[in-house]
Amino acid sequence: MSLRKVLPEENRKQLKEDDAAKRDQGTEKKHKSTGKSRGRRAAALVLLLAAVLLTVFVLIPSWKYYRAGRLVKEGSYEEAVTLYSSLHGFRDSEEKILEARYLEADDLRERGNYDQAIALYEELGSYKDSAAQITETMLAKAQSLVNRSRYQEALDLLDGMEDSAGAEEIRKAARYGRADALIRAGKPETAAAELLDLGDYEYSETKYRNTCYELARNALLTYDFTAAESWLEQAGQTKDAPQLLELVRNAADYVYTTPYLKVAGADDVGTSYLWLHSVLSPGSAAASLMMQEDFTLGELDGTFGGDPLDYSQKDWNGKLTWYYDYSGREDGTWMLGALSSDFKKLRTERVDADTHKKLAASPQTRNWKLVTVPQTADAVREGFRTRKKIELANKGNAAFYYMTDSARVNHVCSDTWCTKSGIYSVKDADTRRWYCADHYEEYTQDPAYDSAKDPNSGAEEKSGEGTD
Ligand SMILES: [Zn+2]
Image (tube, rainbow, N blue to C red):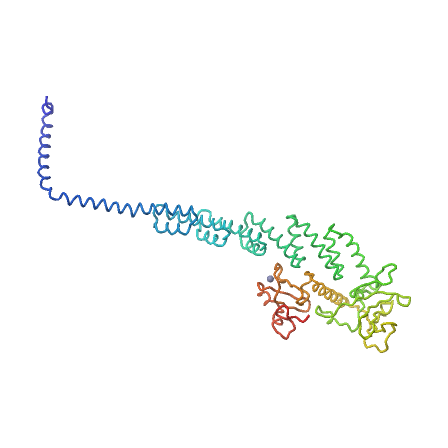
């Protein structure tokens, strides 16, 4: 049974129409047989174009993209970024540029190129945690500066930052190191204040007490018993501080309340220039001292030259008397000072070296007078201490370097925290200040700068040109 027989009438009709359509198509194909090869070429062109497009827009970018990724892994960030940039937004290449930059900044920091790393993170702006990485990099840089003993630079950097976790520990380490450097440079007083402030950080407390002890010793060297007492109290049990404190308290008694050193059985007691000139008059409540009448305060200026004279106490005709001697004098005479046991009648006279007899009409006979004005007494005392400090500085005690312009002393910059050598100096009536090249601006702003510039002023502009 054929299909046509079982199909309803209208379906058979449809099949007939379909057959007719097929016949029509057959005749059309015969008509187009001449354009067949041209069509193939067009198709080939389309394929070629597709292949080219695929290569240009997909394969090459894909390869570049892959290659750039490799370069990032190899640490060739610049090349990688150049390659990503040539992709003009292919896939997530824009994002990859940022990622490469971010990794490069991290790499720079690891290798210690902190400034370059910070600059990169700043360029990255809000990418990932770049802002936090800037802080981290600054902290790493500060720590690196501390490790290289560049404490002040570390502190300047930290001061320029907002407070962050980790900054405080680095700051303490920097201050601790700086205090050490200050001690070595001859600035123990500044160091002591720092160490005290650092409290229980590392060995700050022990270092502080040791520094106080050294400061007390320095004060003793210049007969500043009041300062010595105070520093020794701070020094606590350091070394022989307790014993020294006891002695200092007595020494202060001697200097300020009695005219002579009490040394039992001593025939020849050495004492200091300062001591003799600082004796307060017994029984007098007001500050006063004996001084040579021709001794002016001008001579007590820090730059006043000459060696200090050592006075001694000696049994002289049955009485303890004060004297000093110029035993090396060419003319064979001695200067005998204070030929009296009564300090109120002290005189300095020139005597024969052998007989110790007073030479008539000695031009160097000096009378002594009692100074009762407290300010004058203080100024005289301070004058002697200043001279002593110069001496000590010349012997290499860096704690006294501000006192002298001598080329023999290695001066340190007067800027509070600076430990560099002072090259430029200015002075006024009380003190001398030094500045390193870094603090040249402070030097020019010093009130004494104008006179220091003037070659006729007596103050010099550079070290090594002084008159001391
Ligand atoms: Zn300086």
